[in-house]
Length: 514
Image 1: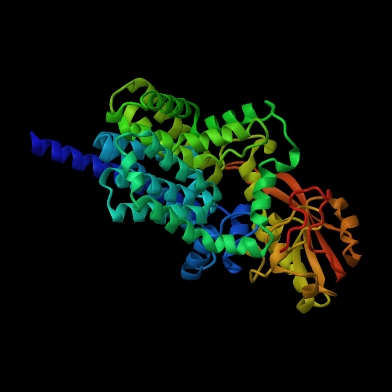
Image 2: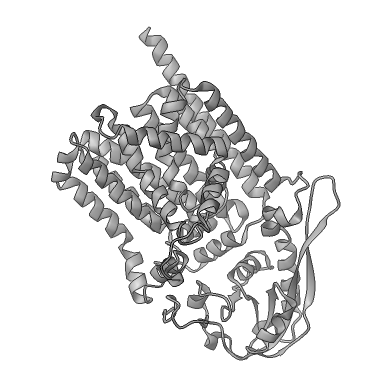
């Protein structure tokens, strides 16, 4: 009997690993095929300008992309490999948590569930901080549970190390620390662990790993903090409303897929009801390492718009809970329906991204808008720059970091492009280029509107009429369809004016120092 159980457990472990590995390969295939999105090329630019911090986000994504592209070259797959690998590691940690404290079947269900969720497939495909944070969050949560259970130095050290890595990946990682702390405070069985020096030194080690980012921010007027405060609604004044609440819940249901979202919330509620049951301590632990981040953004949605991916890490330990509750035989019909619909919707989204087959209206096809035309645009802009009267004193620019970054990746020779931020918002380009670097240079630039010529004449001596560049999306079995038009400008004699000028002196980002 024990031998049969051992074989069954081994089969579960192999199956869980196979699920994770198979989807890792699928994402790698898609990653090599699909052009970079603007945010991805922006993070690739970070890897070319390595620093201890960046304006918009924590630095780890730039460091990771810089490492992988130096090894494998500047190509789409290399840029995305950190995310591809990170989400697989996150899924493995969630499965390990489910295996150790729920059951081998729950571990397999956790692997199946995490790979079914659109949020994690996207985070494991696109080169953004989300995948790296997911890995660190899942690892920190797993080792934190082991640390409470075993109370050994290696587990506490691993918890602190992964916390530090997560902070280097995304600032919202900070929320897991009070979650782990509050679990200990509310758990009579584990409260004594907090009387030891181990958890506090673990936390201190994580903070030390993050300290270079604090040093960088101190040197640059706490610009990252200003940016986070701005997108969190600090400039909007105090006031609560329901304007964004429905959008927030809708985005979460869409990214998790609706039935999975229902199961996850149900699992968190079940865990909440059992918080005082010491025998169910791991369920309480999963609640404390999941609900606070979700709750934070739920509350913020009463004030500001919340991007759908922001709470993504919150669902990792919730997935272990969900697999433990529903993936082991409880409510089998609901579980199977949730998994089937999640895989169906996720596979459809991935298929449409890599091999567009659905005749979605152009205005609704975000993948086509984000990904189409950049290679051709880069070649066109690069060719025009090469044919300028002074090609050696000609730079390529965008009026937004998105266009500037895509031109950097797709123009021939991958030039060091410029973003003229004067009329948009501050970003990393303000740190890389100063007016004195380019005074008197000519330029070729890309904008989204034909009327941008008026703005460009404020920073150049002369601006030619723009060349229209139509962007097409390609649908399988159909003729290419134009979805938008970009504009390429030839400009002469740069006068200065790269840096962002705030429209309102009360803007919290005003007074920042690149």
